[in-house]
Image (cartoon, rainbow, N blue to C red; front, side):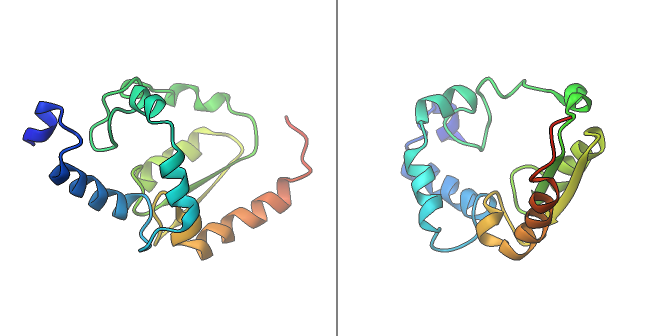
Amino acid sequence: MAVRKRGNFDDPEYQVLVRKVYSNTLCRLDPWPEPVVRSERMANQQIYNVMCGPDDLNIVGNLKSWDIWDQLHEISAQTLLIAAHYDEMAPEQMKRMSTLIAQSQFAVCPNGAHFAMYDDQRAYFKALIPFVRTHAHASPT
């Protein structure tokens, strides 16, 4: 895309594309719930740019080469990984993570995106509430 090559990420046509992608991968509700809108509005764009770049379509920030797959086995805490079918990270990768974290549980929100706590509440809280109830008083290992 020419806009990306020129670095003109504020181009209105490019922003339409970004919004379309975000409406499928961040939150599939229309309109977005107020807390999602607020989190987007209040995000520190300077920090986001350092970590990711101008948007999630092409990660060019310092997270581009960040890789801790070989360290996941070091996590000893009870861990719940909740994947969502439409999120930016594929559920298969989250499932893989769960096999590398010893005390982990894995759940999928089949109708959710990144903010599955809003757009797939039933599946999200079906996984979260029992996990919290089980581990709320557990001492760290």
